[in-house]
Amino acid sequence: MVSGNFLEMFDFTVYAYYATAIAHTFFPADNEFISLLLALSVFGAGFLMRPIGALVLGAYIDRHGRRKGLILSLSLMAAGTACVAFVPGYATIGVIAPVIVLIGRLLQGFSAGVELGGVSVYLSEIATPGKRGFFCSWQSGSQQVAVIFAASLGVLLNQLLPASELSAWGWRVPFLIGCLIVPFLLLIRRTLRETDEFAARKRHPGFGEIMKSMIDNAGLIVAGMGLVVMTTVSFYLITTYTPTFGKTVLHLSAVDSLIVTVCVGVSNFFWLPVSGAVSDRVGRRPILLLFTVLTMLTSYPAMQWLVSAPSFERLLLVELWFSLLYAWYNGAMVVSLTELMPAHVRTTGFSMAYSLATLVGGFTPAVSTSLIHFTGDKAAPGAWMGLAGLCGAVATLILYRSQQARNGYKLA
View 1 (cartoon, rainbow, N blue to C red):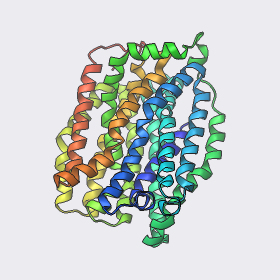
View 2 (cartoon, rainbow, N blue to C red):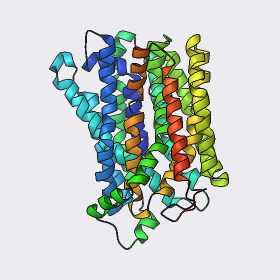
View 3 (tube, one colour):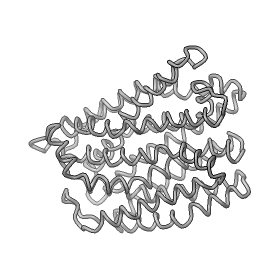
View 4 (cartoon, one colour):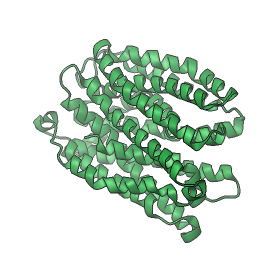
């Protein structure tokens, strides 16, 4: 079920891990900052396609079924991965190379626009009574497996290949592995059955009806976007940006940064289902508010402590603290968002809110790099995470004014 989430996050994570090598291969420039920023901007460009994918593919899923839509989204994602894995570098085919990479990232973003929403809705609809939070938490859990696998593969490649070969061609190996596992993932997804809730519905809305519902529920979607911003910013900060931050800002070894990322993935994987299960018992709102407030109060001071005396140990401690903040918040947030959306357009509504939030969070590596460059403050990414925490807190307060979601679920 969550195989597409694995591939999505594996590809996004690998791109960010090897952003420096990708910058040299596809975006060479006299200024190293400009080269890296171009590579990270293309990474973020994939998120620009997510709202479109959320509308088009989300409407397809709400109309034709969860199973068919999830197979389609995985196929499109695989095509985007191949674009990045096989295209020759700028030195070989010139400007066509970065254009193809951009197309690949846009295609991945289009498919990813509905992947997470489709999986989350599927899990919420097959969950046993009283365990919806626990079930939905495994959507994010699958992403952590991808983070662990990608970072572990990075550690192995750094041990096996000299830096020159890793920069020249070794960075392509993870993308090739991603392509090789696609047939297996498609086979798994084809075995899915349709959810009983969707199958029992006598009538499914057409595209026009879904678009009208999106307009009618625009306020709900924007508030949902605010809820997700905390998740996207914190996740991309502690996973995809960590290797780049550790290497280029803290001047730690690539292996040290990747080991920290593996530990973050393990920590996330542990805390996410714990949070989902606890939210089933105590409610979503208390968890969301507690961890957004902790994020606002601690993220910048923690980052200041790290950059004042950079070390592997300090990076590990700070990232594990950020992991706890992210995972506890996200474990309650995902199920909340599925409960907030009207049932007949649940996939589209969830996907739109999430996709709009990734327009902010997805650019976290580029924003963090720019903030450090222009302010001279190496702790600036902590302030960016604190601002995301504020967004999450405000959205939680707005959304939980009403004690009843529009789809009939009781909001806790």
